Image 1 (cartoon, rainbow, N blue to C red):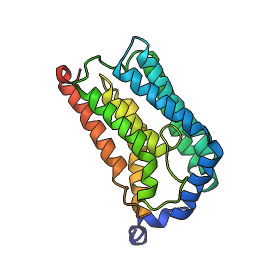
Image 2: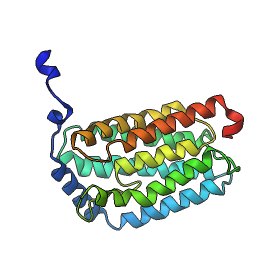
Image 3: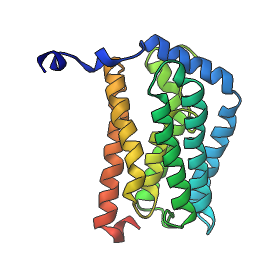
Length: 224
């Protein structure tokens, strides 16, 4: 037991930061120009949330589910598996969340109110900030060009964007928070072990989303 307690998170890393960032670079090069499609999809999602229609909810969550499914199949199975044995498990987690999001959307359980002065506006603004700022975090962390992360194409940006959209929805469904919270915790620990200055971002977004969900549950008149 004493020997086990002597280990730190960094001792369990299966790759160095350089290997991980080079993987991101290869992945971004391989999937280009999907970045343009992902960005256009995100703008469409923001438009459907701000000016909701009867069909907006299902379409928004179908788009989000596609991002989780792409990340599971292409990023984890196609690329991340080359540096980590845990890739299939992460892929399964993301694929399960994709199914849950699509199902909840088409069942009408995740809708967006027409009123802008509520959590919808907060979530939407945060979503747009993530969309435009996430690719620039690579510069802040000292990565090379092309080693950035994009919403719906990489796990970290996809999870944060999803948390923002869950915050914007009129109601909260706790089952949908499980996978994002698990990944936020794992990501925070991993980046902390890699000595990344942004290790705290995803856990913070997860805490904000959960706080918003609790507020919506106990203050429904304000949240809607």
